[in-house]
Every structure is written in C-alpha cells, then in structure tokens.
Image 1 (cartoon, helix red, strand yellow):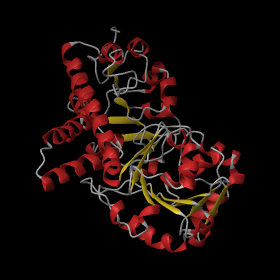
Image 2 (cartoon, helix red, strand yellow):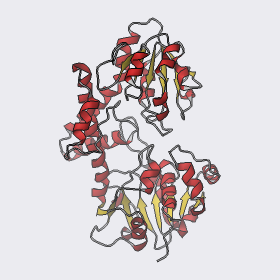
Image 3 (cartoon, one colour):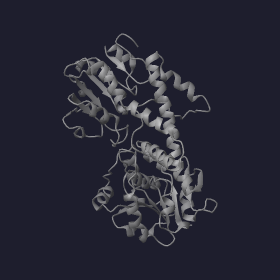
Image 4 (tube, helix red, strand yellow):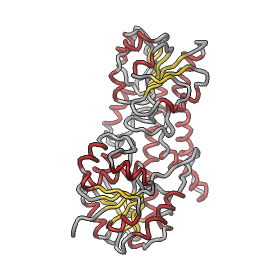
Length: 427
C-alpha cells in the first residue's frame, strides 16, 4: 500500500510536535486548527511552542507538512488524530469541552475509510463514548514530555493502543503508520489504554515522592542523595532510568490531573486510594522547599530583602509556566524586591519584578539568588561573578546546577535538595 497520510486536529503542543514527528519519520502530515492566524504563522515557520530541535525539524521536513484552517483538508487523510492539549483546573480536573467540540467539528469531514484516533489524554470511558464507527475508532496514549516532545514523537519507546477489540487486526493504514516507528505495539481495551497512561504517571510520581522524601531527610542527617542514587540505579528492580532526581514536587498539570482522576474514580468505585493522596501531600510539601529555605536564612533576617530568581518556566527546554515552582515561590514573596531571568519566558509574567538582561544580572544587590528552573545555561554561571554583585551570601540551588566547591570558594552559602547546606569555607 502507499504510505498513509496522517492528520492532526489541533495544533497546540501535542498536535504540532506529533505532526512534525510524523514528518520526520517520512509520512505526509496535515495539521488542522480553526485558528486561521495560528495556521498562517505555523505555515510561515513561526512555531508557537519551544522545544529542542523543533524548528530545525520543521524546516528539514517542511515539504511533508501542510496546514489548514478548513477541516475538509483532513478528508485526504488515512488516519486522523485528535491531538489538542486538554487543560486542567487547580484541582486537576480535565476540561473536555474542547476535545468534544473538535471531534464534532472534524468527524463529518473524514473519508469513509479513515481511522479516528483520540491522542489527547482523556479519562477512562471517554473513547468508548465517542460517536464514531467503533471499527475505526481508537485511543492512543500520548507520550509528550515538555522539553523532549520531538524526541518522544519521532522515537517512541512503544505505542499503547485502545481498541474496540484488542484481538482484531488494526486497520492497515493505521498499522502501517505505527509500524513505521519500529517500536512495540500494545493493543488493549479502550479503558485499559486510558488507565495505562494514568498508571505510568502514578508510578513516576511514586518514584519522585520517595526520592523527595529521602532527599529531604539527607539534608537533616548529613547524607548526600547524589551519593545514594547511583546505588539505586544499579538495583535491577529500580533501574538505570528511574526518576531519582529530587525536585520541587510534581508540576506541569498532567501528573496532578492523573492523581486527581484516580482519587475521584476510587471514591466513586469504593477503591482505596490513600497512597495517591499521600503523593499529593508530598508534592505540596516539596513545592514550598525553596520558600522555607529562603524564609529561614534570608527573609527572617533581612528587613528589606531582595531576591534574584533564575528561571520562570516549570522545567527546562519549554516555555510553559503552568504550575511553575518558580512562580509558586514568587507568589509567596509578597513585598520582596525581585529580579528575574528566563531564557524563554518573558519577565512580564511577574508584574513589578525587574527584568534581568543576563542571568548574572539577577544578582545585583540581591540577598539571595534562587535557581528555580534547571536550564542548561545556568550550569555555566560563575559563582564568583554572582558573589561580586550580591549584597547577601545565599544561593538556593535545588537542582544542584552550580559546582558546590566553586560556590563555597566564592564565599557563598549553598542550599540544595538532598544534602546539608554547604557554607563558605566548606565543600
């Protein structure tokens, strides 16, 4: 058969990165959005998301990509993914109205043999309720990770596929597309696939929560989590790729959504989900780590404190600020003078803060500098350059971006997750 044409309804982070990933694997891809202005900007190469390698991949595979604000353009596609980002509220509830509207908008325009695939994350039971021919209706677990979206879209580790009948062969065009990525295919019932995504995130959260709990204990007893983590990675039951880097709780929205979904489903079905509630409690505690540290060593000791903040995005290599630990910290620093810097996120997301032109500029007159997003560029900052411009002597570096010996040699006190504070003269 000829190579299938793949459609993506929705040109937000998920849909756009997925379309470019498909083109990178040699498939023609059609992207649809009702926002004509967005379509024009994308077609001109003005991508609305920031991801490593995305602009270069777009330019390299441009001839296989087309974009339209007319849903009829999807009529030539053999497989159409509904791939819009699903927003969540502060309690982790998904707003499914946009995906429901997108399904209603595009399904009338699909050709009679086209396969419809829900790629957006939805709660168990959603796909079975979609009004479309069951033989051509599927759910596929999305594997987007902010900062690694193109890599995950073009080189997935496996495809988890929700099917009307997991024992039946997949439609030829859909199978040909998936097999083009050379990874295992895992067909299963709709509900199993929808819950599989949640299960993956719950296991990740379990690792993060355990790591953060023990890393904080390290700070109190003089142990160093960075020394312990390699021993865990060499245990086959835990593994080399385990989430063992401590951090400021879970963020970004998707993990909280999945935990909240499990708690709601458990309550409805009479299933015990107390451990999931503990994960959320642990996350809330770690999100306050930077504020607790600054409060203890700076805010309670300085009458008019000034803090330099490095990083506003919720993680490196992305423009997203949803549930950003940095913005959460800033929200707790009412009345504190702030200077902020981020390589991608504009400083005006923090009203009243001074915008630093360069990373080192946040240190000017600061009593403390907090590295709140682990951007790779921040690892190259010279602690001595910070010390020369600071009024105080405190560096809050939860992700251990700076060299501890260099920080101590510069006469600065270093506070990081997972080890005791390193004070000037110590390393």
